[in-house]
Length: 267
Ligand code: BTN
Image (cartoon, rainbow, N blue to C red; front, side, top):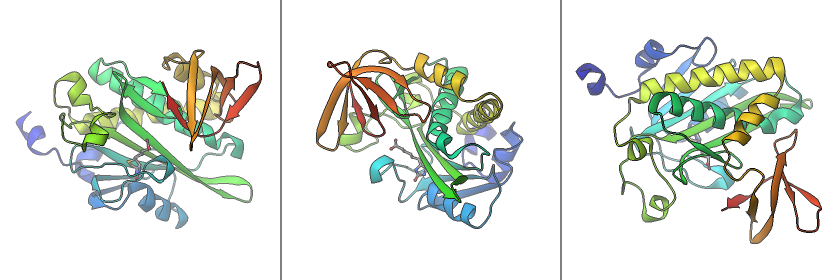
């Protein structure tokens, strides 16, 4: 126990020791500090790196969130990781891949902590209405097909309250804050990749139907009235479903259904 606590750093050796996956983590690129794990993984994939490679860092100097936002990636506090996927799926399925991450992270957190994460569209994982995990999925197409997808996942694990800027502190939480105990990041990483691999195998065989059902079950505002913020425009309606590309279907008061591709959910 003592030894594990003393070596919290996620070295390649430590990661190999805990992983229980065949594909994810087949190659491991573990960094002390990096610009962004997504950027590094993207470059690797462009150079032909195989599916399953994992890029992980103790700290990101330029961690990126959705919509070119900065992702706070403090040293040793969270899991900042990217995996390379090369799915043999129709290009129209690319927008569904982030749902894999949300559901897998949620299952892993539930199994290890007993906490019950909730989903916030498009792909945030929430605890107590505060964000503990974000997903940044970046796709490269070649000849109209998916060449690769970089699935980037950031999870706030061992932050304590007040360790972010005031602005982030209002909207973010960590597993440690919610569980009131420090977590072993290596165990969480192993469980997330395990859940991700199972879910990935399943969608390749059976399609995304069951996965999206799982996501909807964990989304408290599914089939409720919601408001989406798009730049400076607000759109309200009932969240009636997700479509086959992962877009949110919103039924307005006039009964018309709008397809929402991107935006921020205000609840
Ligand atoms: C969001 O909610 O805005 C998405 C956040 C995604 C953050 C992760 S951390 C690992 C990977 N590398 C990055 O630069 N971003 C993603």
